[in-house]
Length: 137
Image 1 (cartoon, rainbow, N blue to C red):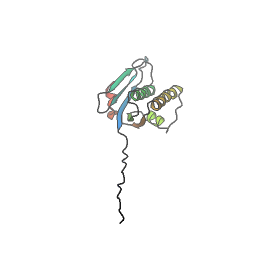
Image 2 (tube, rainbow, N blue to C red):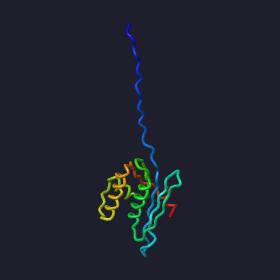
Image 3 (cartoon, one colour):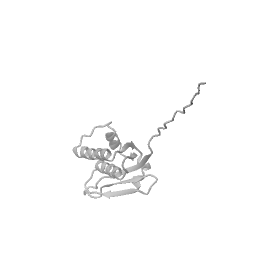
Image 4 (tube, helix red, strand yellow):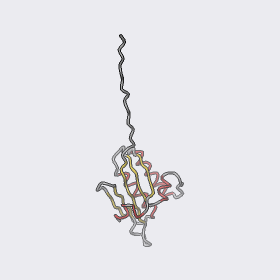
């Protein structure tokens, strides 16, 4: 008599990682060089930050917002970041190259944070009116 054994094949469910949704905003300096800074807020939480740093351009401020938001994420997490800056979005995603030395340094620092904290990051463009971080400054 031959016995048959039935084996259930294990189903491995691969679900995409749960992304932490973060909105960032940078605001450039007034003509007197003061008043610039950045802000970020995590959707669905009370985590947020507003920082002031005189002498920044709007793009520098956006990059500092991105870096600050990523530094606040838990290690080995995934984030979907929303910015009002198409330039930051496209430079981060490699569509545009970075020509400015200061911006290149900022982007390099961001990539170091991503590598050090083992983050998965997607950066997307969003209309200014829908960006929650723009309401913080």
